[in-house]
Image (tube, rainbow, N blue to C red):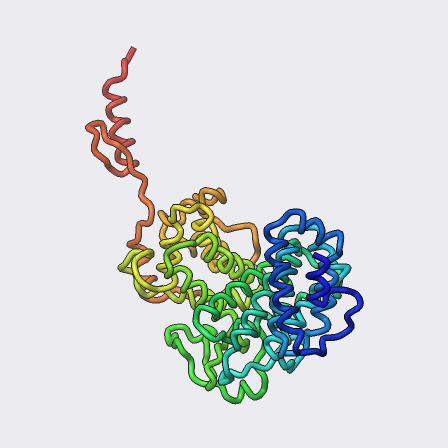
Length: 432
């Protein structure tokens, strides 16, 4: 272990990384350390005694702004991820003693070549080249290490913590808006970004959306989805550079998350690992941030015009999510139902309008809302979005009709069945 640490430039005596000829040896030494630490409990214990996490952070600081040593950074980060995965104590050391949150965030900034235009806003070049394979791998390892560092970050206690998490969320927003060298690498990059965003305190996720700049406002184009029957509805717009805008806010990152979610649904497998993180993230964002909820409601549950087909029939995002409400995996169907419930502002009547009573029965039973009402959270009141088609069909829907058995064993509406039993009881009763 000590020999490998020396060859990997992880000892205290090495001050810089100047000899390019040594770089292949450093990379191979880090690879060996990764394999040994992963497979040997003794090596894991030695890593603690040798304070390997601190040495890895020092090496990262030496090379964080130097792009020509991406391989060194990549395997340094991989070893840091393994240590924080195998030893929970190292997570706390990384977070507080070693300042791992700002350090790893800076590694991501360097990998993405981020240029800040405001405190929590970065410049996005939609026509720029994709990330290189080396930059993508480095970013993925940094995202995985950051996930371990922040896995217990449920609450923000200090203003400095809030600032750090907002910076990280802004970097992750940038991550969602760029692409890797291949479609598979892009999905892997975005998947790790989603996982990390799930660790960010929900109050800091407001940086995922931002107001339009003056230049963007001047370029604003036509609406994607006109709603002529509702003059007061806030409409989604598109800019000339295809930026998604809603209510004056840039919604590109949220739209990417929504598209990512739909792709995971379309895969049809591994829902618990692949789908629930992004669904949970979108649910919490919608519950805490009104503009995000309204945008997602507009995309997922637009004004209801098709009132002839069942809610689970079709290829829209709503149809796909409604089908998940009766999935065999309890966790999957719960989070899918919760997401739609939050988009409906936790109003039972609104949820039933979009999903039907049978699909929503599981959620409503768990919440004690089978008789109607609304959830515990408060939401602002929005304008009426019922379409003329829905208003005309609403009196004919008969979402739920209790049924009962007649004396002859056939099914009939419950009220009629009770009346027949009452008649039989009256005629057969003893007058004495």
